Length: 302
Ligand SMILES: Nc1nc2c(ncn2[C@@H]2O[C@H](COP(=O)(O)OP(=O)(O)OP(=O)(O)O)[C@@H](O)[C@H]2O)c(=O)[nH]1
Ligand SMILES: [Mg+2]
Image (cartoon, rainbow, N blue to C red):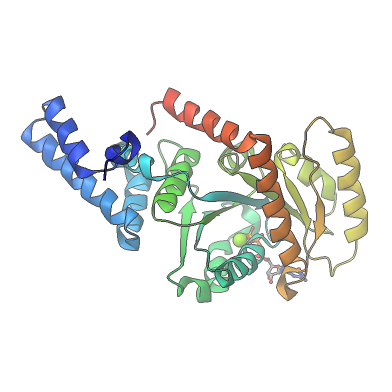
């Protein structure tokens, strides 16, 4: 069977031909082949190879770059969902519940949990781990926590690379959970196709927290902990703010959930799917991805 150019680019033969063409030295060639092997392992679904490459991304991005470049041909299939909102609003619980529904549908899932260094939630990572323990036994789910510390090249870059790795690993849906507090979080979550902005009643001056720079990135608004007082008022405030921003083809829905009781989660997934459908039909999905690929190209990142 004849291979088309895209398929050809994915074969070992092609890389070897490239090596020859570039006249690489012996040691460079060995490095290149080693990188190729890692890529092959990941696209075959080897979780350990993926985990190792993510560690390399975290510890030495420039070394990982060569491998990431080769991996890039094998990405673009996963849908990326950003889950963001204030500390303790229920991001992990919601991610956990949606993941369970997706698994029931036979989809595979990647979860990247950005460790909040926020003083409100010192123990968040441990909490996430405990809540997601049963998921971590499931081979169809890959969970990775990333620290906000370190990352010479920037956390957002490391997160993007990790998304690509999980995409190449074959995950259908990838969640990025991050506390939506500052610019860096906004940057991280911008790589997502759909951004779910979670809030909860009783945050004091609620709306200010949501407003702080992240309001405009929300494609879907969720008021979690709807079992608590103040849910209606918060919903009204959010709707009012959304009324001010009508210049987009997509009006973000405002949903209510009680994540711990699995209330409203199915509806949330339906809305996520509806948003993805909107992105595809309006051509925005392609446009967003092209733009982020272009940014990556400009920065010569992968
Ligand atoms: N009452 C109530 N509690 C909830 C609900 N959803 C989550 N919780 C609880 O709220 C707490 C925080 O939930 P998480 O899912 O860890 O929240 P998070 O946003 O991931 O928190 P961080 O990662 O620390 O920012 C946990 O004790 C949950 O059990 C809900 O709908 N109602
Ligand atoms: Mg969490």
